[in-house]
Length: 64
Image (cartoon, rainbow, N blue to C red; front, side, top):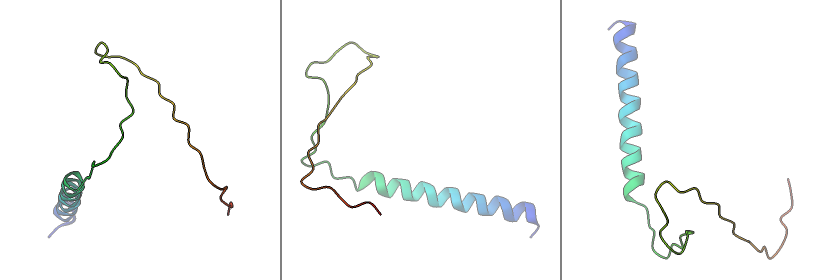
């Protein structure tokens, strides 16, 4: 087997592995209890939105 065919086979195998991995992640998502951040009413299509969420931490983590 020459190097050109070997490279094509390696790239093909990597692509197949990435494709199969992405399918498995896409089907295992669990959105139960998710809280979506969005506007209250539907606006016009192609709308730019800006969101802010305030988060309160119980304690400060040490750096390092």
